[in-house]
Length: 213
Image (cartoon, rainbow, N blue to C red):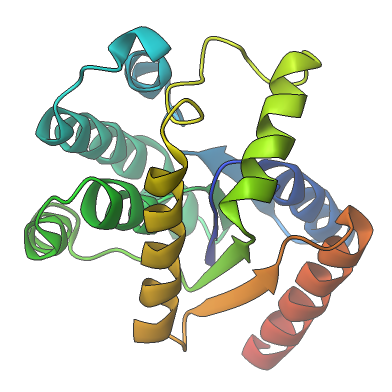
């Protein structure tokens, strides 16, 4: 089973992905966690370029191609081998992030992104996508608080430094994607308290796993 966690900055997806993999492992599931960008050694180098605030002048097409390169390595080296072994793979961001950020927010052609994913990766998508949704104003406030407290890497703030209007487009993009694929997406109110969000995620996963047994 392949599960992705999506959401804007400060939505808590990384925290909840880590909680979730521990919960699933404690339940006896053979489960691993990864992320994009940066799920491989090569991907970490690509991540450093993409999230560096000094890369603020990066062209949107360059950005798309770097994310695609990261995903190519990630799928071949990590995701597909683990799925073929029967492991449950949890991914902190994946294809939908590219659609939301580079497509809806940057304005690149949505059809182009979809076609690239189909041609290059045989349209590999998660079995389930957990979208942690909240207003960008709240998410950015949380993200900057974590950065200023030293709980997040200060060298990875290129997207946090984008205008609020950019983050609003990202959120709208995510919600549109969830509307187009309601059978795959589960939209969760991430503005709630952390423990409430965690309980909802566990409830959703328990139901889905039991359905598949």
